[in-house]
Amino acid sequence: MGWFRRFILGLSSPKTGEAMEKESRNWMVQCPCGHERSVWEMGGIRSGASGKKKIYVRCDKCQKRHWNTVYYKEPANPKTEG
Image 1 (cartoon, rainbow, N blue to C red):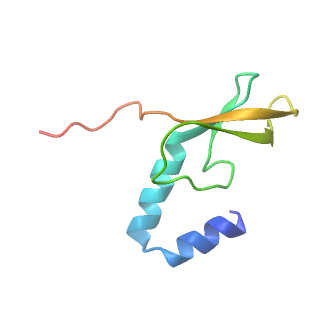
Image 2 (image 1 turned 90 degrees about the vertical axis):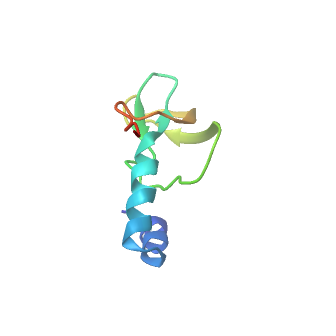
């Protein structure tokens, strides 16, 4: 776990930390080669955000630096209320 994530989670309650982890796992970083991974897997946190953005990072699969798209991927089985 990266120092920034440890710092933020250390300032948060356990319940808030769990919610940030859950949301960060749904934020995906996709390389132009098609490989994608979650922000959480990359050691980051993205919580309370919206929209898409681009980040310049190295891809784990193709090992090249590219502008990767960061987007929110809806959970496969969202819970329905009722």
